[in-house]
Length: 280
Image 1 (cartoon, helix red, strand yellow):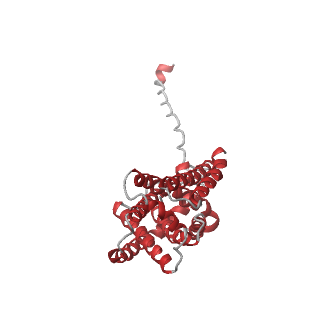
Image 2 (cartoon, helix red, strand yellow; image 1 turned 45 degrees about the vertical axis):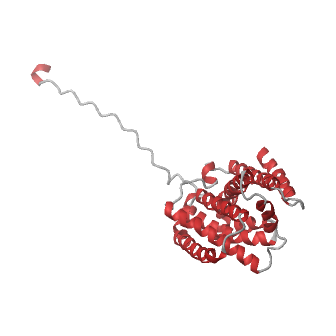
Image 3 (tube, helix red, strand yellow; image 1 turned 135 degrees about the horizontal axis):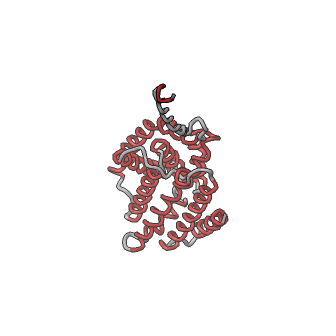
Protein backbone atom coordinates (compact mmCIF):
# COMPACT_ATOMS: atom_id res chain seq x y z
CA UNK A 1 0.00 0.00 0.00
CA UNK A 2 2.83 2.42 0.83
CA UNK A 3 4.43 1.71 -2.55
CA UNK A 4 1.19 2.56 -4.34
CA UNK A 5 0.85 5.83 -2.38
CA UNK A 6 4.47 6.78 -3.05
CA UNK A 7 4.17 6.30 -6.82
CA UNK A 8 2.22 9.55 -7.61
CA UNK A 9 4.59 11.53 -5.39
CA UNK A 10 7.65 10.29 -7.28
CA UNK A 11 5.96 10.99 -10.63
CA UNK A 12 5.09 14.53 -9.57
CA UNK A 13 8.63 15.24 -8.39
CA UNK A 14 10.13 13.83 -11.58
CA UNK A 15 7.89 15.82 -13.91
CA UNK A 16 8.31 18.97 -11.79
CA UNK A 17 12.09 18.76 -12.10
CA UNK A 18 12.16 17.88 -15.81
CA UNK A 19 9.56 20.54 -16.76
CA UNK A 20 11.51 23.41 -15.19
CA UNK A 21 12.62 26.06 -17.65
CA UNK A 22 16.15 26.12 -16.23
CA UNK A 23 16.84 22.41 -16.64
CA UNK A 24 20.30 22.76 -18.14
CA UNK A 25 22.36 20.79 -15.65
CA UNK A 26 23.07 17.05 -16.01
CA UNK A 27 22.45 16.70 -12.27
CA UNK A 28 18.95 18.17 -12.64
CA UNK A 29 18.13 15.78 -15.49
CA UNK A 30 19.48 12.81 -13.51
CA UNK A 31 17.42 13.81 -10.47
CA UNK A 32 14.22 14.11 -12.48
CA UNK A 33 14.84 10.80 -14.26
CA UNK A 34 15.56 9.08 -10.94
CA UNK A 35 12.31 10.34 -9.40
CA UNK A 36 10.31 9.17 -12.42
CA UNK A 37 12.05 5.77 -12.32
CA UNK A 38 11.13 5.38 -8.64
CA UNK A 39 7.53 6.19 -9.52
CA UNK A 40 7.42 3.54 -12.23
CA UNK A 41 9.11 1.00 -9.94
CA UNK A 42 6.78 1.58 -6.99
CA UNK A 43 3.72 1.29 -9.25
CA UNK A 44 4.99 -1.92 -10.86
CA UNK A 45 5.93 -3.67 -7.63
CA UNK A 46 2.77 -2.63 -5.79
CA UNK A 47 0.70 -3.93 -8.70
CA UNK A 48 2.61 -7.22 -8.70
CA UNK A 49 1.95 -7.65 -4.98
CA UNK A 50 -1.81 -7.34 -5.58
CA UNK A 51 -1.94 -9.98 -8.33
CA UNK A 52 -2.83 -13.55 -7.42
CA UNK A 53 0.14 -15.22 -9.09
CA UNK A 54 3.90 -15.49 -8.81
CA UNK A 55 5.40 -12.01 -8.61
CA UNK A 56 8.17 -12.75 -11.11
CA UNK A 57 5.63 -14.08 -13.62
CA UNK A 58 3.31 -11.09 -13.15
CA UNK A 59 6.22 -8.82 -14.10
CA UNK A 60 7.35 -11.02 -17.00
CA UNK A 61 10.67 -11.91 -15.36
CA UNK A 62 11.07 -15.22 -17.15
CA UNK A 63 13.78 -16.68 -19.34
CA UNK A 64 13.51 -15.38 -22.92
CA UNK A 65 12.65 -17.90 -25.61
CA UNK A 66 15.10 -16.25 -28.02
CA UNK A 67 18.77 -17.10 -28.04
CA UNK A 68 21.67 -14.62 -27.71
CA UNK A 69 21.80 -13.96 -31.46
CA UNK A 70 18.06 -13.33 -31.66
CA UNK A 71 18.18 -10.97 -28.68
CA UNK A 72 21.07 -9.06 -30.26
CA UNK A 73 19.16 -8.67 -33.54
CA UNK A 74 16.03 -7.46 -31.71
CA UNK A 75 18.08 -4.96 -29.68
CA UNK A 76 19.64 -3.61 -32.88
CA UNK A 77 16.14 -3.45 -34.35
CA UNK A 78 15.07 -1.12 -31.54
CA UNK A 79 18.08 1.10 -32.26
CA UNK A 80 17.04 1.22 -35.90
CA UNK A 81 13.44 2.15 -35.11
CA UNK A 82 14.63 4.76 -32.62
CA UNK A 83 16.74 6.54 -35.22
CA UNK A 84 14.01 6.32 -37.87
CA UNK A 85 11.48 7.78 -35.43
CA UNK A 86 13.88 10.62 -34.57
CA UNK A 87 14.38 11.41 -38.25
CA UNK A 88 10.61 11.38 -38.84
CA UNK A 89 10.06 13.75 -35.89
CA UNK A 90 12.67 16.10 -37.30
CA UNK A 91 11.16 15.95 -40.81
CA UNK A 92 7.72 16.82 -39.38
CA UNK A 93 9.17 19.84 -37.59
CA UNK A 94 8.19 18.57 -34.14
CA UNK A 95 11.63 18.36 -32.54
CA UNK A 96 12.21 22.10 -32.05
CA UNK A 97 11.11 23.24 -28.56
CA UNK A 98 10.09 19.66 -27.74
CA UNK A 99 10.97 17.59 -24.68
CA UNK A 100 13.51 15.70 -26.79
CA UNK A 101 15.44 18.90 -27.49
CA UNK A 102 15.02 20.07 -23.92
CA UNK A 103 16.48 16.85 -22.52
CA UNK A 104 19.33 16.98 -25.03
CA UNK A 105 20.62 20.29 -23.60
CA UNK A 106 21.99 18.92 -20.29
CA UNK A 107 23.25 15.78 -22.04
CA UNK A 108 25.36 17.90 -24.41
CA UNK A 109 26.85 19.58 -21.34
CA UNK A 110 28.24 16.22 -20.22
CA UNK A 111 30.36 14.98 -23.17
CA UNK A 112 32.54 12.87 -20.85
CA UNK A 113 33.51 12.28 -17.26
CA UNK A 114 31.41 11.49 -14.17
CA UNK A 115 28.42 13.54 -15.38
CA UNK A 116 28.07 11.41 -18.52
CA UNK A 117 28.36 8.16 -16.54
CA UNK A 118 25.74 9.44 -14.11
CA UNK A 119 23.31 10.08 -16.96
CA UNK A 120 24.06 6.70 -18.50
CA UNK A 121 23.30 4.99 -15.18
CA UNK A 122 20.07 6.86 -14.40
CA UNK A 123 18.55 7.56 -17.82
CA UNK A 124 19.67 4.33 -19.48
CA UNK A 125 19.72 1.69 -16.77
CA UNK A 126 17.07 3.07 -14.41
CA UNK A 127 14.46 4.13 -16.94
CA UNK A 128 15.06 1.17 -19.24
CA UNK A 129 14.45 -1.37 -16.47
CA UNK A 130 11.52 0.06 -14.54
CA UNK A 131 9.50 1.21 -17.56
CA UNK A 132 9.56 -2.32 -18.95
CA UNK A 133 8.54 -3.80 -15.60
CA UNK A 134 5.48 -1.56 -15.54
CA UNK A 135 4.26 -1.25 -19.13
CA UNK A 136 5.26 -4.47 -20.90
CA UNK A 137 5.58 -6.48 -17.69
CA UNK A 138 2.71 -5.81 -15.28
CA UNK A 139 0.19 -3.94 -17.46
CA UNK A 140 0.48 -5.97 -20.67
CA UNK A 141 -0.13 -9.19 -18.76
CA UNK A 142 -2.95 -7.64 -16.71
CA UNK A 143 -4.74 -6.26 -19.81
CA UNK A 144 -4.50 -9.44 -21.90
CA UNK A 145 -7.47 -11.37 -20.39
CA UNK A 146 -9.78 -8.45 -21.23
CA UNK A 147 -8.27 -6.91 -24.37
CA UNK A 148 -6.47 -9.87 -25.92
CA UNK A 149 -2.81 -9.98 -26.85
CA UNK A 150 -2.93 -7.43 -29.67
CA UNK A 151 -5.28 -5.14 -27.72
CA UNK A 152 -3.05 -5.17 -24.64
CA UNK A 153 -0.02 -4.40 -26.80
CA UNK A 154 -1.80 -1.37 -28.28
CA UNK A 155 -3.15 -0.24 -24.88
CA UNK A 156 0.25 -0.37 -23.16
CA UNK A 157 1.82 1.43 -26.13
CA UNK A 158 -0.77 4.22 -25.83
CA UNK A 159 -0.10 4.56 -22.08
CA UNK A 160 3.67 4.50 -22.66
CA UNK A 161 3.35 7.30 -25.22
CA UNK A 162 0.98 9.34 -23.02
CA UNK A 163 3.39 9.23 -20.07
CA UNK A 164 5.98 11.15 -22.11
CA UNK A 165 3.69 14.22 -22.08
CA UNK A 166 4.96 15.79 -25.31
CA UNK A 167 3.89 15.46 -28.96
CA UNK A 168 7.36 14.69 -30.35
CA UNK A 169 8.43 12.55 -27.41
CA UNK A 170 5.11 10.66 -27.41
CA UNK A 171 5.38 9.93 -31.14
CA UNK A 172 8.83 8.43 -30.67
CA UNK A 173 7.66 6.50 -27.62
CA UNK A 174 4.71 5.07 -29.57
CA UNK A 175 7.01 3.74 -32.31
CA UNK A 176 9.35 2.16 -29.78
CA UNK A 177 6.47 0.97 -27.59
CA UNK A 178 4.74 -1.06 -30.27
CA UNK A 179 8.04 -2.67 -31.27
CA UNK A 180 8.89 -3.48 -27.63
CA UNK A 181 5.43 -4.97 -27.11
CA UNK A 182 6.12 -7.23 -30.07
CA UNK A 183 9.45 -8.26 -28.56
CA UNK A 184 7.66 -8.99 -25.28
CA UNK A 185 5.19 -11.32 -27.01
CA UNK A 186 7.83 -12.99 -29.19
CA UNK A 187 10.32 -13.65 -26.38
CA UNK A 188 7.92 -14.04 -23.44
CA UNK A 189 10.17 -12.04 -21.14
CA UNK A 190 10.69 -8.48 -19.94
CA UNK A 191 14.37 -9.34 -19.44
CA UNK A 192 14.77 -9.16 -23.21
CA UNK A 193 13.00 -5.79 -23.22
CA UNK A 194 15.30 -4.45 -20.52
CA UNK A 195 18.31 -5.37 -22.66
CA UNK A 196 16.82 -3.61 -25.70
CA UNK A 197 15.62 -0.53 -23.80
CA UNK A 198 18.80 -0.01 -21.76
CA UNK A 199 20.97 -0.35 -24.87
CA UNK A 200 18.76 2.07 -26.82
CA UNK A 201 18.84 4.72 -24.07
CA UNK A 202 22.58 4.32 -23.58
CA UNK A 203 23.27 4.81 -27.29
CA UNK A 204 20.91 7.81 -27.36
CA UNK A 205 22.65 9.47 -24.40
CA UNK A 206 26.14 8.69 -25.71
CA UNK A 207 25.52 9.92 -29.27
CA UNK A 208 23.68 13.05 -28.07
CA UNK A 209 26.61 13.92 -25.80
CA UNK A 210 28.96 13.46 -28.77
CA UNK A 211 26.90 15.55 -31.17
CA UNK A 212 24.58 12.96 -32.72
CA UNK A 213 25.06 9.95 -35.03
CA UNK A 214 26.55 10.42 -38.53
CA UNK A 215 23.58 10.07 -40.86
CA UNK A 216 25.75 9.09 -43.84
CA UNK A 217 26.00 5.50 -42.62
CA UNK A 218 23.50 5.33 -39.76
CA UNK A 219 20.37 5.73 -41.92
CA UNK A 220 20.97 2.62 -44.09
CA UNK A 221 22.06 0.69 -41.00
CA UNK A 222 18.88 1.75 -39.18
CA UNK A 223 16.67 0.48 -42.02
CA UNK A 224 18.47 -2.88 -42.10
CA UNK A 225 18.44 -3.28 -38.30
CA UNK A 226 14.77 -2.30 -37.95
CA UNK A 227 13.78 -4.72 -40.73
CA UNK A 228 15.74 -7.62 -39.24
CA UNK A 229 14.38 -7.06 -35.73
CA UNK A 230 10.80 -6.72 -36.97
CA UNK A 231 11.13 -9.93 -38.98
CA UNK A 232 12.14 -11.85 -35.84
CA UNK A 233 9.26 -10.31 -33.87
CA UNK A 234 6.70 -11.27 -36.52
CA UNK A 235 8.19 -14.74 -36.75
CA UNK A 236 7.88 -15.36 -33.01
CA UNK A 237 4.51 -13.64 -32.52
CA UNK A 238 2.23 -16.66 -33.02
CA UNK A 239 4.11 -18.95 -30.66
CA UNK A 240 4.49 -16.17 -28.09
CA UNK A 241 0.79 -15.35 -28.25
CA UNK A 242 -0.18 -18.95 -27.55
CA UNK A 243 2.30 -19.16 -24.67
CA UNK A 244 1.05 -15.94 -23.07
CA UNK A 245 -2.60 -16.99 -23.28
CA UNK A 246 -1.78 -20.45 -21.91
CA UNK A 247 0.08 -18.94 -18.94
CA UNK A 248 -3.03 -16.92 -18.02
CA UNK A 249 -5.38 -19.90 -17.91
CA UNK A 250 -6.29 -20.94 -14.35
CA UNK A 251 -5.19 -24.37 -13.24
CA UNK A 252 -8.25 -26.61 -12.88
CA UNK A 253 -8.45 -29.87 -10.92
CA UNK A 254 -8.36 -31.77 -14.22
CA UNK A 255 -5.07 -30.09 -15.12
CA UNK A 256 -3.47 -30.78 -11.76
CA UNK A 257 -1.17 -33.80 -11.56
CA UNK A 258 -3.01 -36.85 -10.35
CA UNK A 259 -2.17 -38.05 -6.87
CA UNK A 260 -1.08 -41.67 -7.01
CA UNK A 261 -3.43 -44.02 -5.19
CA UNK A 262 -2.10 -45.39 -1.95
CA UNK A 263 -0.80 -48.88 -2.49
CA UNK A 264 -2.73 -51.54 -0.66
CA UNK A 265 -0.69 -53.83 1.58
CA UNK A 266 -0.06 -57.20 0.06
CA UNK A 267 -2.29 -59.95 1.40
CA UNK A 268 -0.55 -62.35 3.68
CA UNK A 269 -0.34 -65.84 2.23
CA UNK A 270 -2.63 -68.35 3.89
CA UNK A 271 -0.88 -70.91 5.99
CA UNK A 272 -1.39 -74.30 4.41
CA UNK A 273 -3.57 -76.67 6.39
CA UNK A 274 -1.83 -79.71 7.86
CA UNK A 275 -2.61 -83.09 6.39
CA UNK A 276 -5.94 -84.58 7.50
CA UNK A 277 -4.35 -87.38 9.48
CA UNK A 278 -2.47 -84.82 11.62
CA UNK A 279 -5.72 -82.97 12.35
CA UNK A 280 -7.35 -86.04 13.79
